[in-house]
Image: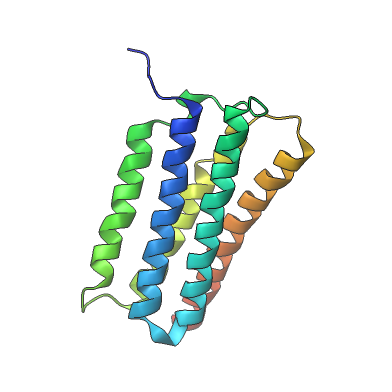
Length: 155
């Protein structure tokens, strides 16, 4: 059975996923005031990433970007987003430690890297290639910041 979802639908799910990750990081900022600056910064950047993905969505709608809609399965994206949403609920629990939060965030960022989202996109636009590079670089920087903080807290 063929999927009825368009590239725009998939990109919107990915944008919502970025926003959900941002909400998790905001919850961690509230939960762990000793590293609030890190979490707040990451939360704001995730919001920006969602905006970037929506720019990609707009470019798909304008036919200046090809994104194969079957590159990502909507069910897999929703499962990932649901996992992150569940972690937001977990953030309120008393037993959650800063190390647990950092470990979860590292896993999330590394999962995004491993999915090779940007490898699925094709364009001749220098502007869009720049946006792809920014998204990939930002995700890698998030993972590194989180690993560095984890290592500082857990020598």
